[in-house]
Length: 323
Image (cartoon, rainbow, N blue to C red; front, side, top):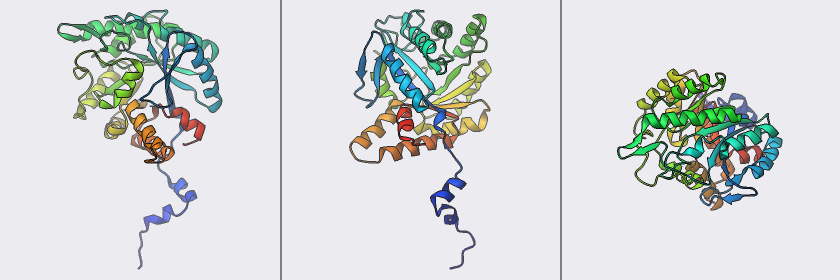
């Protein structure tokens, strides 16, 4: 048979496949999340997230030294306070867990890019991302506290603040407070298109942030909507975001692609806890090759258009040189 077009010619060897590859993932564009807890010498394994633990600041410092030797330079911090209240006061306490963690990390490892999650859900006794009244989660009072939290992170030495609450107008409020506080050069990485997702289950166990009542569907996005994501992203850019994010990643590759086509800003995708745990459990039970799954999933997220990825697989990727 005489065929003019034989696409298989470009797949004949590993060398040719690499040469013609359209997407070349870069593991230096991965960000490793960490869960910080109060105390010293504390390590609490998270049953639903194999290989991930809640750790105290002193133990994290030891881990970061090892991670730096692997080449991991970018981290995202979540804080779990010893005490919670209705207004999440631990989130903006200058002596809070994130603020103390950032100060210690930057003192010892100034070369680490330290991103801080800015939200109230880990700090409120009701588990919601904002102030609650009899009418539900209140947007504007929450926005003020979220901006206050971002400023406290900046004052502690954070390199990037990342609001994840999905309150309307919070990027503008944060930008205004940062600028007024002398941090006009500090970037905002906005969780711009964050969906109300079942894939967050393991994270909520890790952070102790499951809502005590109701759900987050009045402020996080409906997973049936795509055009709305473009609106949310556009609003955050207009308000002053420097990096925008789509969360989750794996079931939202179409959203990542659509956002990439619409915006020029750097685009982050969050490969979330449920996506991580599914892969880990499949690997542990012998249902699939874990390394191959991780490589394929992260490559697909980059292929969809992400410039950077937050992933709990980051440490494994560097250790095993998967990308």
